[in-house]
Length: 260
Image (cartoon, rainbow, N blue to C red; front, side):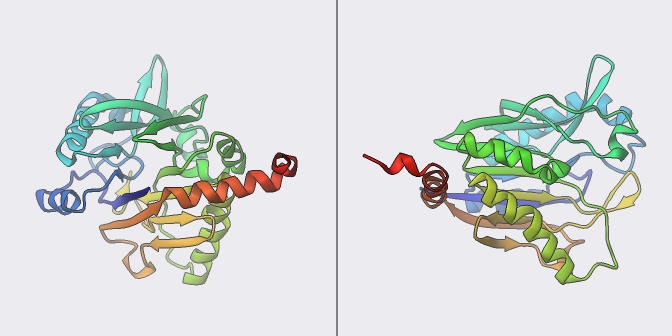
């Protein structure tokens, strides 16, 4: 089974243009992933103001999933639950909300501004493809990927924002990609789709290096010279291949299972 995925490296706080939507529709992706905090624009001074706009933002993202006629990992939004704020990613298909994941590992800058950690991993099956959603720094928690391999996940989507690192060399960036994303893909026995935003978040510049990782390498990645540019990273993933890889992991981990 072949699945087309797109990581939409978009400008923070800006909705997709008609031209961009048509570009996506023409490629008929099965899954489209947006960046973390994708609709927070320069007018939002903090997470509280962003949370006040959550209903409008969710409606905007639902409409986008309907227009694209696809399954949308809708970046993330800030939403309030009682007195707490959460960084939440919604899964949508053709305008319908299929589920929600709340970031388990907010960074210190988020917790200092009121973002609380979620309390569970989110997995589901869409058109016979089993997916999970994590957000940004969740990717640094290898324990999450160790748990996901037990769930037999095919694709892990990770909406992300990354601070600009102007002094970092290309070799350093690629080494970090391998240490985090290829390693995690190998641990989970799954593909990983990381989608970054570009522009600024609360006045701080971002760098986008969206990528798609597999246990055996990185088949698609935004190049370092384009880290500040919009990009629509597209690739086709072989779900049967990742399941065969996972089956071999399980056989290696449990050799007694090969006995008849």
